[in-house]
Length: 375
Ligand SMILES: Cc1cc2nc3c(=O)[nH]c(=O)nc-3n(C[C@H](O)[C@H](O)[C@H](O)COP(=O)(O)OP(=O)(O)OC[C@H]3O[C@@H](n4cnc5c(N)ncnc54)[C@H](O)[C@@H]3O)c2cc1C
Image (cartoon, rainbow, N blue to C red; front, side, top):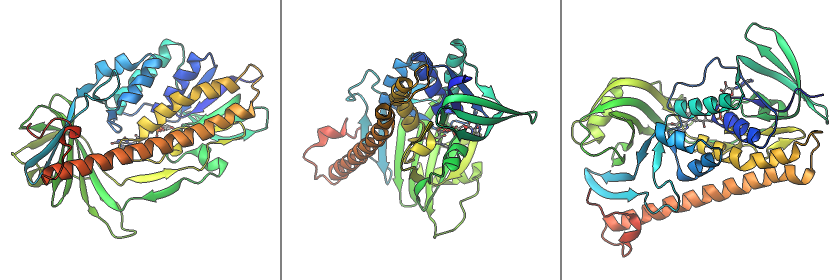
């Protein structure tokens, strides 16, 4: 007799989304996380229309929208000149905006929604190892006081992040590359921003600077800090002074950064595993995906929402698997992800070409850029 139909390892945004959705299908879920608390960082900030549509199905889109900040356009400039203003009002969705919602808030809403349906995240519970015996998965968990527990589930889903124990125990490689460009990130308050809060991307000879409004006067800033030679260590965490220097150079108009909430440096990786299932163990979350900036939660959570039906379908009372349905988990995931990435890349390329054409006065199709460069 199993303790749960599905044991989810990791209560990040993907694990909690997965738990919420599986519960909606009537699946008995247990979700554990080694951390004592959910994140308090803004990490994955932008929530797109498609994610909100799927979160609506899970009944939490309204809460997310209420807690976030709606951005209706992105302002693009270079050499202190406006290049364009891209609006989201042409998006075929009920959500014609980009929602700025700190990951800490996304996780809060998910955890509270789980609690409402009687699912409590088991915190300070770490997965040590598991054994898939063909009929069930027997997992060893360690509690905060050091005691170990053995639990049995029909299925196990690893949503335990980029350094996943589940992935490593399955021996699946997190294949891909890390871009050799250093980026700095700041979650700060800005004084003197000259326009209404929109996303603002600025091309400068030193590199790109992008600001995202989070809430009144609070902004996420990311700035590229240059290409680094092979093997060189990642930049240390920037100081508020470093961020101010970047703003002074790249952001016209004397904007001042104060009250840092979070400062960080990062590089962008594009990695994923080749397949997402081994026997009774599924992989979800971070390592399923080619990670790009702003894609981690979006890809993971939408994927979880899209795929829980398949997991639920194979989780009958006996825990029996239908080989056909479980394979869907793999193939749909990969194909949808590939399609989404290709679509996003193509869209980005098309927009960039049009913007460039417009700036050079060569575009005969300026409408498609959204509103003209007048903001
Ligand atoms: C410092 C930082 C900054 C980021 N900034 C951005 C950003 O600006 N934009 C963006 O889009 N994305 C950003 N990301 C990425 C984004 O946070 C991730 O894509 C997202 O959190 C992935 O969600 P997840 O649920 O798959 O995994 P995670 O959020 O990593 O959650 C995994 C959970 O599993 C738990 N866990 C791990 N191992 C075990 C174990 N053995 N047993 C039990 N529990 C375990 C962890 O405690 C964690 O809570 C950032 C990530 C980091 C770390």
